Image 1 (tube, rainbow, N blue to C red):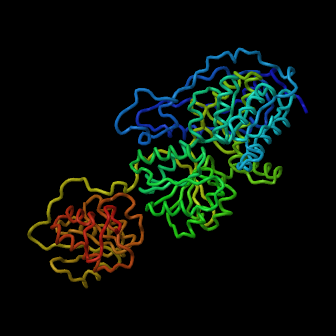
Image 2 (image 1 turned 90 degrees about the vertical axis):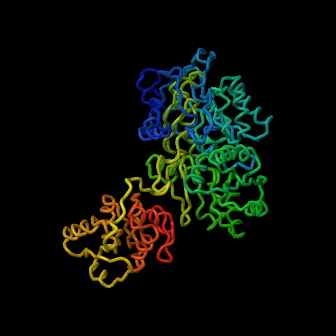
Image 3 (image 1 turned 180 degrees about the vertical axis):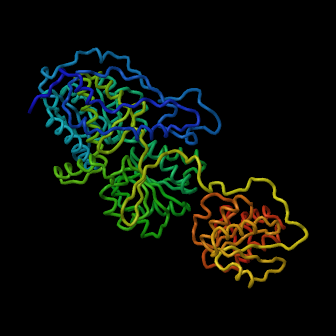
Length: 635
């Protein structure tokens, strides 16, 4: 193995430093997620860091700069506790955790002082229900180690992964961690999937001052210990729960939601933040059911949920159980839409669910279908080596181990320096895409939302923030000046605009109204001039446009002249722009019915264009069978 040139040239170290971005100052009225998205757009590729030789601490980064954020984990205002009633006098977890120990002052060993650079791994890889997940995480981490060694390791000395099984029992796991620290002298560790074991590791790290990187445990209480030795690369259950709540309640308008979760710490702690968000958005969870790990029948729990008249269901479960749940829902005739946390997606999901997975929506740490060359190349290398598909555990295990290796190379063999390098990281781009780290060294990049359509998942970035505006969110209103009534003397009129309108008007007879047509097939300038003259006649109370092109022109004129327009067209774009004067009837509706909509409204509301518009927009029955929404669409 060729030795790397370590310590001789500081440029080697700078080439390895991850992309650091300055903290974006809070601006009133600008949501925190905007800053995060700006970081994502600016993040540079990691390919250089993964292909360069290790700088072996030639230019250590020093203590991380003190940072603060306006909102912990980018939590939107309406999802914060008691935000409708008061503001807290102090917010936790918004500043860089302080470390005032002496680890930085310990001697930094040189590559020549060691025979290997030991790194610990803790995961469920033997006799455990999560062995498949732990093995995937181990494969990703080991691949990162082997590729780093192929580039020269640490000054010619190999990185060596010290592998330990997480039996997920307190005594066994703590013993394994103590062995790593005091017997194997590891410089840092990666692990685990179990939140119990990760919490134990944190307590050991507090005493032994051992850096830990976490790529799989999503318990939101892990970084909230304020133990300043942990970096978390996966978005936790706080972000997953809040994102699902935003999608379910704000986006889709569901009100009665049931929870079905596995009865272990992952499910128990995972659903807490979703329950909190549901309550804060005004829709407390209706029913929560739990099942034991390994259960194969969920019909009792599903029947209880179904009897509670829920209109949506959220799953906090692993892929195999989630797939079986979906299949049994289909067999029971349950039609509610289903949403899931990230671990719902996996090999067992589609194998067990089949067509029952259609319509499922899940949140996920990254987009697994993107065509980024870095991602595609990693999948190719991983599959060739392990004959296995890449999943979140393997991909994040690879990225997180690379983050740790880069930190060791930048800081040198000094645990305090490695900790400083980890907490100095503000952004990183790996094979899974962009990560953004808050002052607690926790990845808070927005999640991806996947939806199963025609048996395949489609993905899009989805934030926790409520949209600042939605077309038609509060309906469409007219807030202009009060309009005058039509003159008392003179005939009340309805206009028709479209192909052959003059001929059509001549054949229409409406009691109390005269119908005037303007044909659109004549020269367009002449047709529009005649239409303008028609609508400026104060006796004309409304206009019917008989096809798509005529309706669009009439809509534009209505904006200026304040006249209600009935458009006969299949084009929904007519009502998508919040113009309060347009009402759409489907193509094929008779002209007589369209005219009668206006005459009925005029007879009941009076000879006033504004009153006619309001009457139609309030959903009153016209022409014996039509009622409109305020947007102009039929109810």
